[in-house]
Image (tube, rainbow, N blue to C red):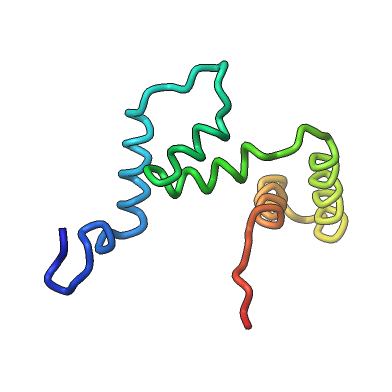
Length: 107
C-alpha cells in the first residue's frame, strides 16, 4: 500500500515498530527441527525476517573455539588494570561494547 507521500506503509514505520513486528512474526513461526541446519533456515527466511536474519548470521557463525573467550578476558584484564576503580558491572558493559559496537566508517 502506497501512502500519500509516495512511501509504502512498511517504510513509514519506525525501526522499533518494524523490529517488534518482525519479532512477533518470528515467535509465531513453527520451530526448526533439531536435525535441520539453522543457517540454511535463515538463508531461506531472510526476506521475511531481515533484521533477525542479520543477527542470526552474526551469532550462528561464531567459531567453536576458546580463543574468542580468551580475548574477552584479556580485554577485561586491560580495562581493570587501567581503571581499577570501575565497578564490575561497568567493566562488563565496557567489554561488551568494545567487542560488539561497530561504528560506521566516516569518509
